[in-house]
Image (cartoon, rainbow, N blue to C red; front, side, top):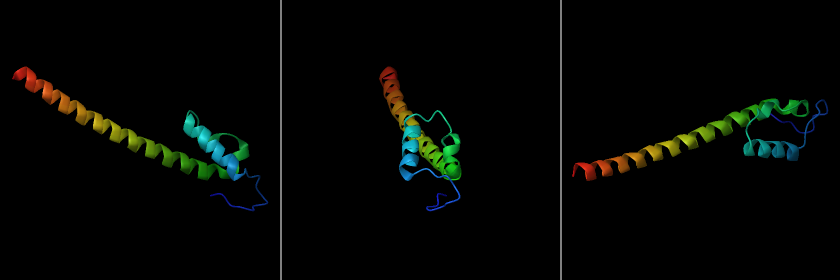
Length: 85
């Protein structure tokens, strides 16, 4: 969790954290929570954000695949009906 006004930690600004998240969402080829020491104070929050975002993407992809399977099934059944007359 990110705590404001913590004089004991070198924290990044909210804008820097949001820019990092935006960059990661555009190209998630790295672990968001393990980028560099400048964001060390935010590691737990970044880790949770990455997990939640990846779960959201996985659910979206699952729904897309289910729709594709349904469309294929309808097309297959239609073609089978044409062939078998």
